[in-house]
Length: 262
Image (cartoon, rainbow, N blue to C red; front, side, top):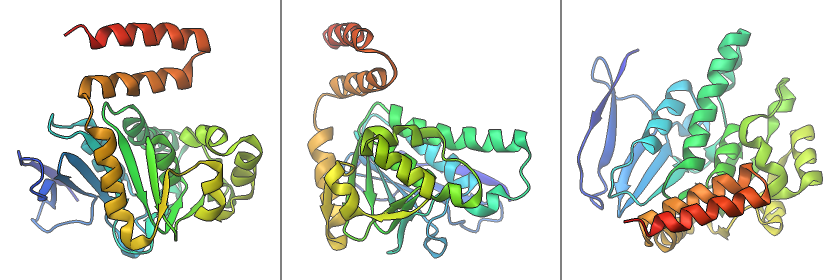
């Protein structure tokens, strides 16, 4: 199946698709929907009958949706279609009969999607309901802010199918503490949001019917500031994650000065 992109230069706030994906024969395929509404880009995983499990094409579309942001977009919000899941993570069929080289290529593509969310110059948010597992939980950790419905369920079940959790699973000790992170990764168990909320994993917990509005409200609060300052702050967060204290301080001095350069 070949897939092509059709882009539209839509003004923010019209709520129509910013990106449309069609099969070569003109029939639509269930890939992530990407919509620009009120300066926010909503990226919705769109296979609810499969718990929005991620395919290679899902990963590619989501990566490009975050990597190519028009100036009018001030934040990115990830969500999932249907009522059962944000995303159950990578579709298990992908792992059948992979060679080592194919496994490296696939996990690199997944890492690129997650890194795009973490390194985006605008705030990134996740609106999480139902299952949020594996690579989808890594995406949630990579985003700046997380709003969860009371029915949200988290987990890193990779160990149960014979593979380790990788990529931004490395952030789990920062989010949950080392002991809890090891429990999550080594058991592969699932956890309700009530267990993670006291650990600071999510910014807000709301009723499922309020999830969309609560996430949009939080997005407006964080995206209304100077785009230059927000991009600088995002770069600093990335630096702080990767270098020591003094290097972080030195980098912040340069970023502070650059805000005044224009």
